[in-house]
Structures are given as structure tokens and as C-alpha cells.
Image (tube, rainbow, N blue to C red; front, side, top):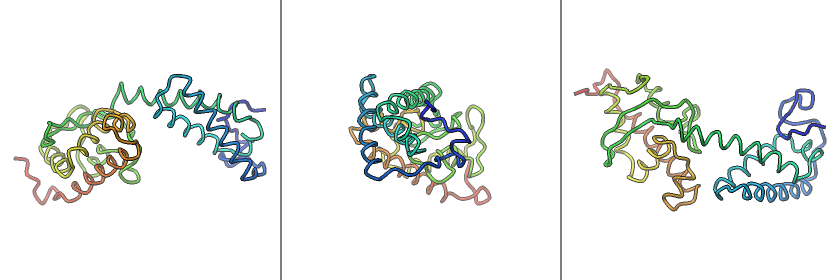
Length: 231
């Protein structure tokens, strides 16, 4: 019997997603998920997690369970699956948190009024909970898609300064703050929500809106041959 709730061999899961076992009854699956959610919440909470971190970890456990519901219901009690999967999800969660805090995004620095800024070296993956568009993780991808050259340290081009200023001026003060904290300084959406005394979903919507407005503002800028002034 496989004791790892996240390991799927090709033999067990030919499609690499689900097994060939018969599907459980809706009532049985619902009851299992209810017990699993309670167990994972209890386990994560006992390990000193903040409530918003517990929610993220529990969601990760449920996602792993959803990868092969019939097999996991056959091979694991909800309590056992919760113990094993919660530990694994928590490790992954902590690793991502360390990356955000230590490496950071370090994408943008902006003066208090949001009127100026510059690009700095950024990490390769997106932060936050909602992408701008499919294939675009954060403003660095936007800059690349517009043909701007992102240097290893700091982009000195005046055109990039003009691009950034134009994007940021379209945002409200709170949208600029959220964009800077998440995409500029590596805060998580849950941390930003707590600082602003908002629920996570509201902060996520604000961040998504800020990114979309920045994208639209950049798309309305003239091309190089139409004269983006460098003076």
C-alpha cells in the first residue's frame, strides 16, 4: 500500500491524475472531505500557524486529495491523510514564504507620491494570488512584453522611467501600495490584507485590479517610433 498521499506512480495512475478505481458516492466523498478539513485545520493550528496560513495549508491539502479521490479514500482515513499531507503542504508553504521574504520580488521602488520609480532585478516567478493575464505573472513580464530591456541590476533607460510613471499614475494610492508591497517587496496577499484590515479576497481583488490598470496604461503608451520622450 502506498503510504505517501501525494505520490502517484504511472502504474497506479496512467493519466498521472486519477486512478482507475470506481468513484465514491457523493455523500461518502462529502463526509470524507468534511472530516479531512477539520483534521487538517486542527493539525495546522496546533503547529502555531496563523489563521490565514492555516486556510492556505488546508486548501493545499484538499487540492492534493482531489488529485486521486478514490485511491486516497480507499487507502487513508481522513485523519491519517491530514497528518501526512498537512506536513508536506506546510513544508512547501514555508519554502515559498522564505523565497518571498529572503529573495523578494525587488521589482519596483517608488517615491511616496508614486510619481517616480525604477526597475531592479526580480525573481522569475509570480507573487500574489491572481495573474494579470495568462502567461503574465507580474509587472516584469509586462515590461518584457513591451520590448523593454531588463538589466541584471537596474534599468537606466529613461523610457522605462516614463513607462513606470505612466502606469503608476493610473492607480489609486491603495492600489499603488498593494502593488508595491506584493510585487515590489515580497509581501504575501494575506499579509497585505492584514495590514489594511481587509479580508484576503478583497485585497486580492484590489491587487488584480491594480495590475490590470497598469497593463492597460502601458498598452496606451506610444511605441518607440511614435516618440516616447527620453528627455
